[in-house]
Amino acid sequence: MEKEQTAVEWFYKKLKNYKSLNLTDKLIQDLYKQAKAMEKEQMKEAALDNVTTNEKLRKIFEIQFEQYYNETYGGVK
Image 1 (tube, rainbow, N blue to C red):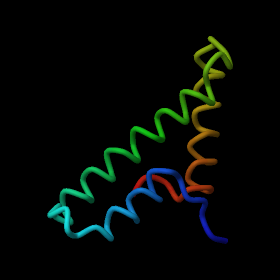
Image 2 (image 1 turned 180 degrees about the horizontal axis):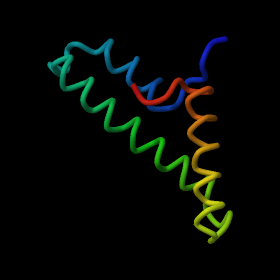
Image 3 (image 1 turned 90 degrees about the vertical axis):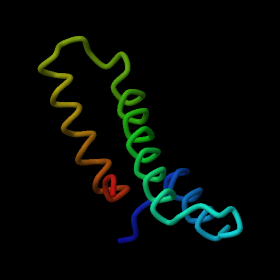
């Protein structure tokens, strides 16, 4: 099963094609990792926003989100 593609992943693939920008592969990879982590956190907060104020339940939802994210998008690489 092919993983879904996030907007950050789409942008990363497009950016890699523009070598004329003189960005190093390491810089592109570092920026990609940072953007993926930020995107994941934003997705998690949006999913959990106003779900519950109970910390134990929130932790369960966070674990479920992590599982969903990893299955759907392959995690942050």
